[in-house]
Length: 256
Image 1: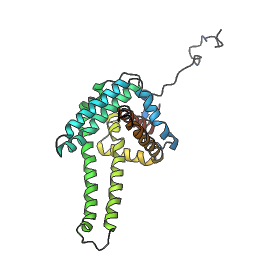
Image 2: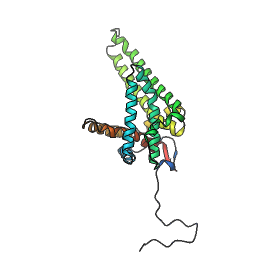
Image 3: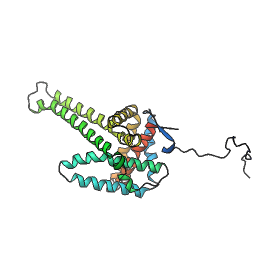
Image 4: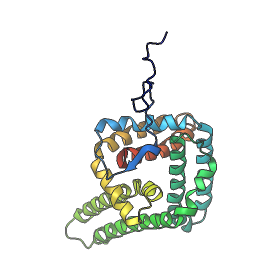
């Protein structure tokens, strides 16, 4: 026999049945970047794996299509690097939409990879262009500082080279942090590119510890994935893409 209390005739009484609380994207709302505990860096990949394992073949197929497209573009000398940088955020936006669909209990498909082109393609290409510009600016400034030493015209010894290395590290690291969550912020919150870059940078700064832990774990998994002829990367790469969605959701959304 059940130990549950008999049902009440009062329509306003609290339900007596067990209610499952859903933490999917459908009952979350956007918020300013939250500061997560450092230990959350251990959970990001686990949450991404939960999404991946529901439809693993779809995610592997999506990643294979993405790699074929990008490698084909990269065949074109010089322009291939530029073009791939411009459209990579569009494909990333599509993967974010696929991850959200799976998180909401829907079935993701390979066609999700192209789903961001229609509604957000322009902004995401501009995001790629801005990211490329930030990198070029960084390398340009670093080159200017290192140039006198390379020409043997510097009386300060290797100091300009050291400054150049610091500029490169800080500039690239800052550009990456500004870019990490910009695509999902544009896709899900319709942010302007500059606003998304600022929000992404702020989210990374507030979560340096959990993101560092995640990065270390992901690097270790990357080494392991390369052991069986690199075949493990077919799993790790889509899981990594889903992880960016998980981190976005944890940092920039709250349960309603």
